[in-house]
Image (cartoon, rainbow, N blue to C red):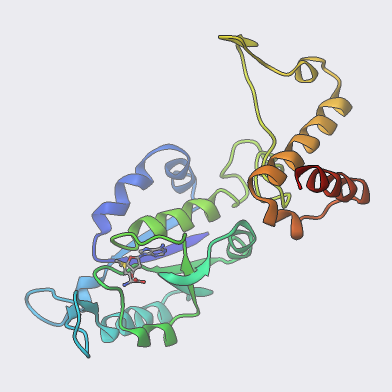
Amino acid sequence: MRFTVYTLFPGLIAPYLEEALLARAVRQGLVEVELRDLRRFAGNRTGRVDDAPYGGGAGMVMRVDVAGQAVAELAQDDPPPDDIVLLSPAGEPLTQPLVQELAQRRHLALLSGRYEGFDARVERLVTREISIGDYVLMGGELPALVVMEAVARLVPGVLGDAESHQQESFTTGLLDYPEYTRPPSYQGLEVPEVLKSGHHGKVAAWRRLQALRRTFERRPELLERAPLTEEERALVAQWRAEAD
Ligand code: SAM
């Protein structure tokens, strides 16, 4: 999986790629990240890539021609990106299904904004816009890292245990079940007995029930789309009736 990130601040992103699992994935050649400085396209000696907004108002806007040169440069890449993503609070929300879709690509380009964001015409130059959540950050560097990390961990070989992302939150359509490790007792807080029973069937059933219950309590809207058995749907209906 290859990522090409355009940013005004490559130095904000680079250190994150030098530690832990992402660093290992890069060393092993499973993930390739190229950081490209948008200032190269400023076309002036000061390196300014922004200008005042038409119509007035606070802040500066990143120029469309700067993004246009990045997109033209990407077309020369071998292979060119399968998607050119503009990181924007107004984009499609990043969800695990979207992450799974992006993980099928060979090459993803990510365009990070700053200031008031890019000139709106940039939306016509990219293939999609992604938001990492309903809040506004100062720039697209953290969103680029969030997208890269979420996608990279689905690349085969990046996580040690191939199964470790099969059961986690959102992949099953539910939140993850609660996990415990030693010690079995901590200040009166106990690990549930069933997990110490060694009975795989009972453990699996308990975990599924916990995942269902947690999702019902914390993110009930996820249950609308989660693949549930008839029995689980009936159970959720019963919980709903009890809660009313
Ligand atoms: N004026 C913009 C708005 O209200 O939508 C916010 C611009 S923000 C200060 C500057 C840049 O940060 C954006 O161009 C985008 O690249 C990035 N950014 C900020 N929050 C983001 C989010 N939630 N998801 C994705 N990118 C974000």
